[in-house]
Image 1 (cartoon, rainbow, N blue to C red):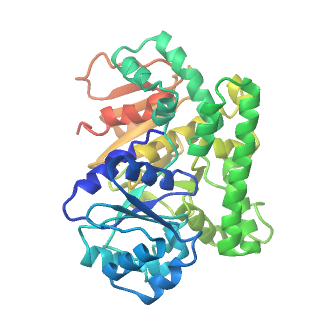
Image 2 (image 1 turned 135 degrees about the vertical axis):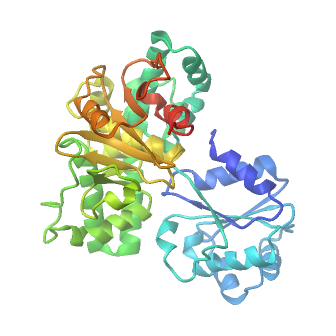
Image 3 (image 1 turned 90 degrees about the vertical axis):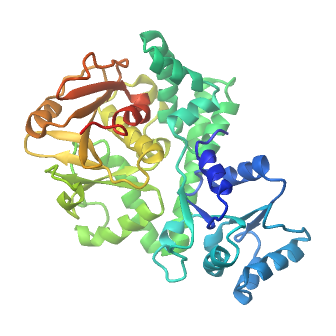
Length: 446
């Protein structure tokens, strides 16, 4: 399965002196699969060690600190010679062995030529622990497949390139049904793989199978919560997670509401740590609400005012109990909010893994997303349908006069006819949100 992150792995391997590479991301986003594909395609030999499946590994890292000795003992344990100068060494589910996490520091210091990759679920929760080798490893965030990767799974990637070069209604209507399917399946590799393999089966059966698989994966996430937080805390985490999906369909740009979510829990102080846990686990995204666009945007946010989104649009719809038929019809009251979740998911996975995204709400206007590039603000208006009337965007432009504004919708791509205007509104289709930002925000005008 094509993943854009492969290029980043290749670049890392080409460095003469490299730190161990740690893949971060929620469970089931394809971290292990990506490294396995990388090893098969670019190394003569790969050695994978899974710390959840093989408990024999734990005592080895507990008693040995020298990387050279660790590699020799791993070789002896598995009966396979390891050449750290040529082979890929993969520590999978490394969170199960804190000593193995700590050992990455020694690999960075003593064997900078070695090819060491590590991955694990809930690694984001280990970043604050003293044993984590901060500064001694590189990180690569892995997300669900974005829409372009999803299209590649159906061997339709060229449609994007053709459409951007020659936007027309014909190509638009070919791509749009793929987007609707993506809203149903989401981008988790296992779900997408099964959906592709069932391509010739009854369409309704395919959607039902997707929902069954999503429910199984949701149980896996809930099991993680119970395993790491205890039964009572896990119930609280689950309720916040499900409620985040439900609140996506409520009042536009409204901040997350804490009332009536869980007995005995009422205010931000009760929810702060659980929300932080879900964010670090990679299964919730948060956009702070701001009412000013003074730079830097970070100083405008308030800790208790924000919106929450689910990391995968398919999982979000499963959590909210939205049937595939509603999504196929694309004719329901809160499709705009589903479009918002899709847009944020695309931005997080392709352009903003380390850059904050905000939601703007004042007494006069509401803008779904605001991002900052080199001191320049880009407002992003999300319209689920064909109607481009946007009073909020017009008001925002009049008040703050951004050089560029982006509006994504159901409509066909329309390139601006005059790039010399003081303020340019760019109109792109929803499914090209990442490409739009690449072309607008990355070379953004001051």
